Length: 377
Image (cartoon, rainbow, N blue to C red; front, side, top):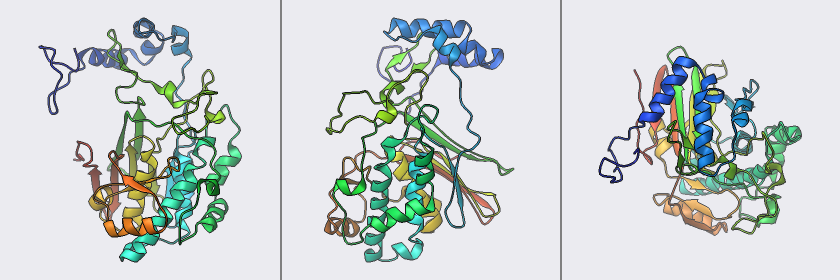
């Protein structure tokens, strides 16, 4: 009824999808307040549809659910800019560690001014990716785990400097060199929006239902497309397809939230005014794509369109191959291969949404890798 026309033919690109039942649900929430979704008849309808599809969520589960507000997000100094991003169980600490490691190289436009300099810069970027992702699977829900020391490490200059000293400029290293722990799951059904208002307030928001179409279950009574976020957890004694053990930090517990690849970010100037609002959708590639756009814009001085569109690379440590977009500089790619990086073509990438304030003007960019366009007034 939602994804097909009146003849039961699947809708094509640019045809209109109408979530009529979902619109009715939103209208009820708008008029009656959010409590109707967690305690009222909407909750009852949703639970009935979940259980009819084989789910085990109860009305009590919905009533107990609380959205959590973290008023002390991660803040890191990037030299002239301060980045504000989400804490665990998101991947904000991973983004922070990547940029902290690279901060020590004092990257500028000069760092990518020649092929040789680009090769070295991108090698260092990949190595920062690897060291940061090697620690990603230690993350979990801080309400259930004591990861204070881990977060302090991943956001500290001293820890980043220690890792940076381990990066060898002549070649990459075997997996054991990076002190890897476990593999984190991927997610794909994600979307992001970056907003900067005329009064200077900013929003960077990422949401996800995990996989494409989530659990592939649509509540007929409410119109809600149900997620499969449970897949973001690890399960004991279940080894993934790479032969890597699951992460105990991310085991399932009642009320616990799983590790997520999301890391929306806001960057501010030295005077505290918003400089950039950025974030992405695209599973584990979210973090590397966001880091690259920040580097491209604020460190390499690319204009925002170029910063977002510029060909990307990705490495999440496991698998160890560097994924490369087809349009990536061949000379730089060959240089990475000479430094012993294993490479392969990238068939999917994260999509970044960014807003930049520069010289009193606002610039916005919606990643052309996925449909959409920036809007303003």
